[in-house]
Length: 217
Image (tube, rainbow, N blue to C red; front, side):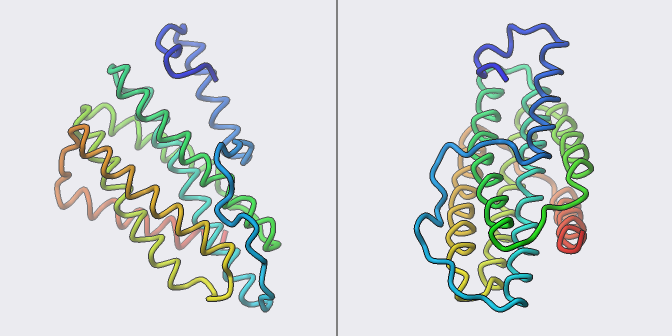
């Protein structure tokens, strides 16, 4: 896809094709990381079969979260008229792409698989991103901040549930958590509005459904 600064000069059909290409790459986990994997040279300690399965399931949930993050930011970027904000969403998506690559790599190492429903997750999250963008830039940034807050809490829970000896998975999740905090703070600094309590509750319920299903499928 062309650099963010060039996107506004593309014809509408070219923009659509660009986002379709990004969507296909995301679902196929073909988006490369730009930063080194936080697991680095950490040893893959001996895990029992049950521990490997537990870690793989948790990392599959995290991978789905990153598929949704790519889709949300793409949807928000395509629906804002502000070139600077569009670039910010695209930059956030690029940083989240690292998470996508890291979680996919760890799932493979653990002998697991990604969610069979990734195309559905992407399509649904993209639609939510477009709706958030259509609600206005302040609401869209508020949606971004609240999403990242909830993801941060979700990742903190996974750090408690991952096997204590699974250092590689834990290093990845810890870095992801730090990045989500930074994204939430950036969205608020750009003028993100606090979302109404019913909206925040709805987001939590939707996230709970997604994580429950992704843990198994």
